[in-house]
Length: 514
Image 1 (cartoon, helix red, strand yellow):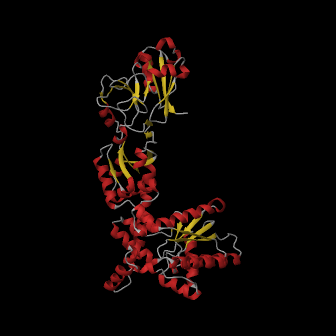
Image 2 (image 1 turned 90 degrees about the vertical axis):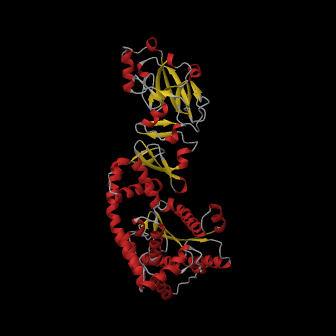
Image 3 (image 1 turned 135 degrees about the vertical axis):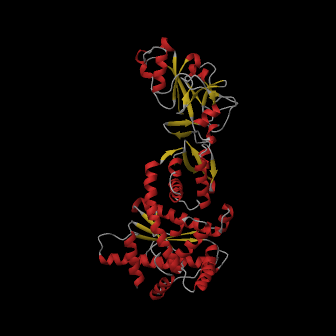
């Protein structure tokens, strides 16, 4: 049985069994039963050989989609019997795929795939604590690969999509990806291994089945040769190019990427603009994959839109992507993130270069979130619609002057009537030490603060004058070492000789609510 030997070598070449356990997805069809039998045979072979490296534990997982009535139950029982006879751990789950597809507004194919992989991962987690690395094995073969490449092409994938499936991707392994359907059927016949034909594989209402049963045979008829071989040859060439570009992109990304916003990676727009589009588009895909672990739902149209946004270079702009994801510009950098992460009421901190911007759950310009005048007597007051509280103390000695992005020092005379609130029309900001000011709206634009968080930023204000923007700048007093030194110099006071009588200086700190 050459398929067994070929599979053993394929697994060794790509390290597909470098784990402690393998969870095999088994439907009961020829492909998955072949996969399970080969894994079991390799395991038994390893025991007889007395290998110093134990073969991974094998388990089988079956999902009954509930679409074919008694036939689906028969599939499950066939796999169960096979596993019982060989003492292979077996896990099964019955799911109403039709209801899930309707509820999530996706196709039966997509709902089924999502349910299967969810159950595979769930089962793998049961092995994880005791077994260490756990891989999930699927039974994709050469013809599946060719179908995937062709489907990707007409979905509008980029060149990387033409590489098709990989032998190993994350914790997913495909030990039969090198094998043809004919080789699999020959193996099954020679070993008299039971399997069942899933009649739904011949139902052309499913997209993949139409490619398999209609399009590929038509291509074979027109070309007068099997289309699988040239598709796989093209995939191999695309893979070689991908390796080259991946290395180049990884170097650029590692050198220039930084975190911002809700923790997502960002890249300077300038870096992307100076690269050839072949590199620039891959940098965008790399950025997306770093945030979401997969780039399958980022289409070529999305990449083009993001590159146009980068060329436009309008800070604060954002565009919508698939499934509630967005791309946005901030501080001259491009980010991708979940829209919910950017607007969630529970998100109160926005990271920026050198500090943090503090946010409340919503824009509330008409009501103060805290009144500074009350704080001087109560000391600590909660800031409504946030997870913060504000602490105010009178500075009595130099050791009380410490600097961080959430602390501001202000003379008592400037605190009268001050409140913590969000922005409102007519707000004006004049940075400490400057002889002129500007509308808050223009200041935020100049500082490249993302437009979609401006309305939630915490501000300390007296009427329309902004006194302090936590994490950004202040108009009076000081908030960092440089502005502190200037402040004391303006009063002709040395910091180490500070006294209450000299300044009546208050320290205002915004901290997480205890």
